[in-house]
Amino acid sequence: MEARSGGLPAFFGRVRRAGATTSLDTNDDPEGRWLGLDEVLAVTDVLLPNAAEALAIAAAGAVVSPARDVPGADALERAVEALAGLGPLPVVKNGAAGTLSWADGGLVHVGAPPADPVDTVGAGDSFNAGLLAARLRGLTLRASMRVAAACGSLSTRAAGGTAAQPGWDEVHFP
Ligand SMILES: Nc1ncnc2c1ncn2[C@@H]1O[C@H](COP(=O)(O)OP(=O)(O)O)[C@@H](O)[C@H]1O
Ligand SMILES: [Mg+2]
Image (cartoon, rainbow, N blue to C red):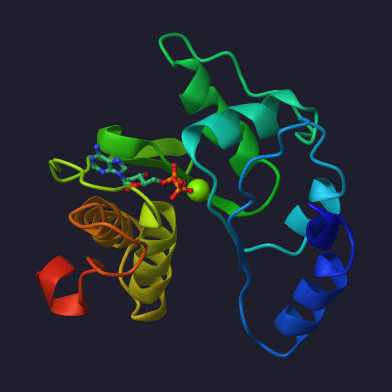
């Protein structure tokens, strides 16, 4: 949290000026204050919270405009839309239920391949790595979300954060 509200916005700004894109997995803010998050989001291209974090960020007022009240949309869908309104592309991890994003004014949902988790440590990081690897290879948002969800699911196959991380050929089928 200190790094986020301290030097991170300036660092992300430098990264962007150098021609790269930026991505952020917030992790949780147990105090629910999300201090400084709005400054970081202003220079973030891809925002990668999990569902609980997405709901908390949207509820904490880091969100500038309240999401539209879309009939039938659940709280998480509204939070994803609200996060998209802040600027970055939100790609939200929703465990066994897959992943949610927002593009062209609509929700994008991709399911997770079934998993019988042994250990979920590092699964969110594997998800993030898969999403970014796919985008850097020029895959569409939906295809990138499929790669990410596969990376997250497969990462739970074994104990530890990296032992079961899949390789590219295991998660991408052209
Ligand atoms: N039962 C499950 N089935 C499929 N994927 C899972 C399951 N549990 C966890 N995952 C994967 O792990 C990710 C967890 O990410 P996150 O909630 O950020 O956890 P952490 O930050 O603790 O790694 C999920 O979004 C999903 O990709
Ligand atoms: Mg996480």
